[in-house]
View 1 (cartoon, rainbow, N blue to C red):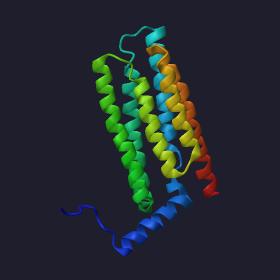
View 2: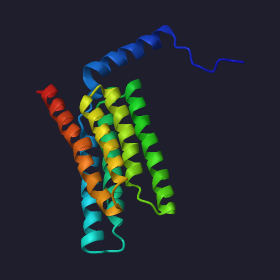
View 3: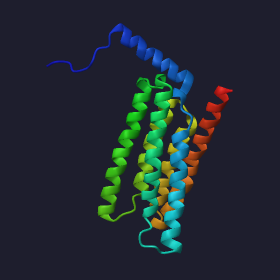
View 4: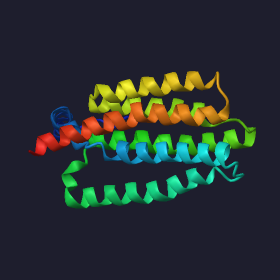
Length: 197
């Protein structure tokens, strides 16, 4: 039976070690943009969905989430494209792993949404579990404790949702997103600005 694992030559091994050291020094130059973008979009979508469902009783209240995706996906992709174009050195092995975590999250999120809609159950607790997982891995890769704390907040929020109805899930998700995404995002942003001063 052949060994399918790739054996690194000495140059590749040194490159991986150098990239890992650079990661520890620069925290892969993460400035919190995506956590702030998605944090604000999720909070606004939660509030809009809650308002449309509870106050206005609009039957298509879920459109708030479609609007979030229509705004967020192109914004995130354009931002990454510009960042890569401006500074191609931002990509390294660790950043590749980081990207794969969020790609896996996106695929899992899509599947959870399809499955929960078909089962006619609230997707919020499941989304919070997935967000907590991806945020925990991100915090671990970046060595950034506020993200790890944010992941714990997401997991606790998922447990709280088990005791509440769908409409309250939206409020819990909004609060968890503030603590789990926005607070770490603003801390990252401030650290990134201080590094450039």
